[in-house]
Image 1 (cartoon, helix red, strand yellow):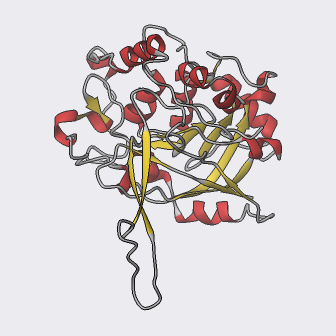
Image 2 (cartoon, helix red, strand yellow; image 1 turned 90 degrees about the horizontal axis):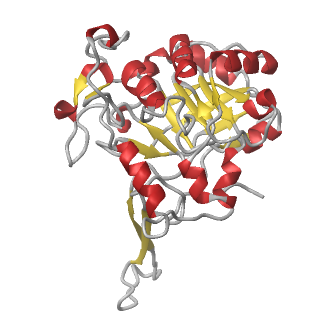
Length: 326
């Protein structure tokens, strides 16, 4: 069965209890950080707005391109539509319009006809990149930036995903189903530094500055069999593992899950602690709902990773389809 061969919606009227709990978690405001916990200014500079993409380099692009031996490409994005599982209240809708359809009008002597589409969507539906304006700590975001300085209903004035440069670098896939011996991994399973280092040794790779790291957990199959459960709970990265990868200088971290991190969280009193660790504290981008199934089936461990996200001005997130090339 192909992941997302079918898609389902998670609607408040059907799953109201689950959605209420998720919304409550999303709305939790973390307590103010103490002086000892201060996590800014950024190591990339007090005025930096780009975070870990500063670790990309021309040498890194050339080295990653040299990994292409087979010419095989892998789409890492899943199909996105109105029934795609998404965190409430997110949704997506497309309307297709035939220009001149009301009177059958055509264009030119060749009688050309055409369609346009009108898309109304949250950017956080399906495969997505979380930008640095997505999640902060007590209303402070990356580099200690107060929300009032950059966020507005008409779009972000800073940290917009349209400002992220093309991410072309080495991708590393760590198959945690092999490492931990279960496929899919159970919900709430957190992997941290020890498991990451062991999986990297098993894969024969050393994670380097500028890499994009993807985790295969097998969880994407739940999008078909249990769409509500796919969103509500999942295996994923732990806080210590997130901090470890950030310290290595990786640009982005992703997984075949809806939130990258383990849910329920390691500390049930927290809300999305991996998101705050990566985005706010370290400027590391998050890639969610990555289709790693075929890469894992082929035993891929490293590849050329290419992402040119859509450049919607002011966007917090973006629906994406990165490509892995071997």
